[in-house]
Length: 110
Image (tube, rainbow, N blue to C red; front, top):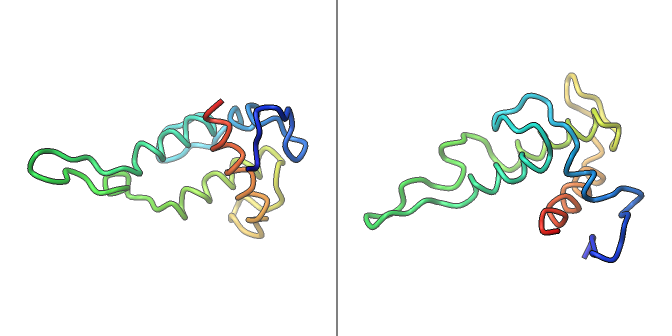
């Protein structure tokens, strides 16, 4: 487990502060990492009716989880939490970015 309720900081970062990181304009209209992750989760599950699926995961959003990762990486780069260039988005420290994404997801449950 990366984040434990008893820990205040993970890798020098307050998990709840990570959720408050501002997002650049994005396809979900989310202003913070918290809003963005919740939006991604809302698109991750299919919607069913008695007649079968109304929507497949991510179908209506039109993005993949891979693309969602990079929108989060961009926010983390802009907040100077990971290394990388924004325009164009390259030289991203994906390992550090993925670690922050996992910390943020676990912090949603706090």
